[in-house]
Amino acid sequence: MIPLDVFGSGSVAADLLQQVRWCDGVSCPRCRSDRAVRNGSYGHFQRYLCKDCGRTFNDKTGTIFAHSKIALRKWLFSICAFLRFNTSLRQLQCEIEVTYKTIHRRVERFAEALDAPSLDLRGPVEIDEFYVSAGLKGRERDRLSRSRGLS
Image (cartoon, rainbow, N blue to C red):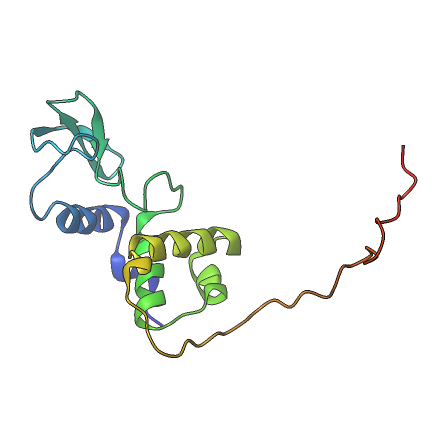
């Protein structure tokens, strides 16, 4: 397992996101205009002002990292560990110290960002788990279910 410190502090992670996201130049996520200027900072992230629509945005706006209270370096670590080392969600939960529900939602969001439905899948499909219904669970098949007698 790689150490969490590989992504350094929050500013190193923010610089990495900025380099990857704006490699073709800064553009407004709302109107797609390239007329954006620097407008202060938001924590470790550069803030921008769009000259066309007048809205402000930062490096995380419109990404899977937007609106997250968890540090960006922890998310970058979890994505790297999940993809590179096939780490389980339970192990990631322990490594970055968040709840299982949180890490599951973020990984799900990351998978959606990869645009998995556009893949052309053919041939046999392997299934890891599936759910088998145990029947009607208290409901009779030939008649309406019984009332519990509550008012």
